[in-house]
Length: 204
Image 1 (tube, rainbow, N blue to C red):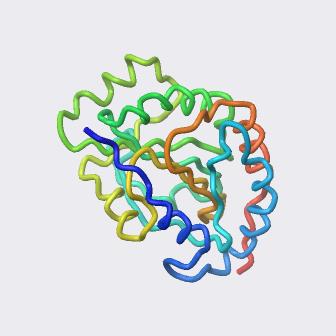
Image 2 (cartoon, helix red, strand yellow):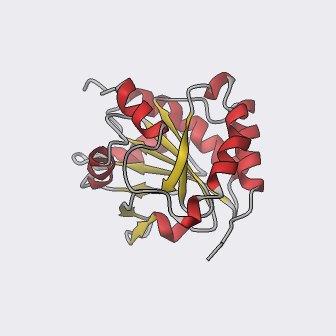
Image 3 (cartoon, helix red, strand yellow):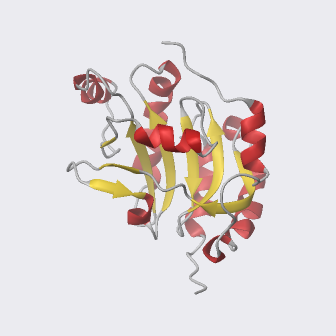
């Protein structure tokens, strides 16, 4: 299958913060986080773009390793790299080992790489592929309905795969990567280290 790519206009629309609901009080501190992280988006992650007006993550659901429904709010208190992928998406397959290495090196109670598979047919391929490339650190998150993709598409935040979001500990969307990246690079590790160091803020 041909992988759909992001349209530049949609990415700029998201970066400017013109789409979706206005930032909540919980996401006001995220603007300072963006200022701290932006200079670190270079080298292998130079294509990572940040929102000037961080907003709460779009409400989406997917299944955890135990088959139970999860949402972004279930991860509150953790910074996330949220990645959508499919076995038919060649760039997705190529970046998966780096995402696995990022989780192995940086994953803990304050940070997780959440990779959500959106295959809707031949579901036996999913785990077979992960086993084939030696993925061992990533938890197995799935959405066989691909509803997560459709919700983000309707919100104007995604047109293709792979797509990766940075989400802070308050559940606010900070940055977006349209396309694959080397998430285990020195640049990525430096950025994630900075992200992890920022404490969640409850201003209510």
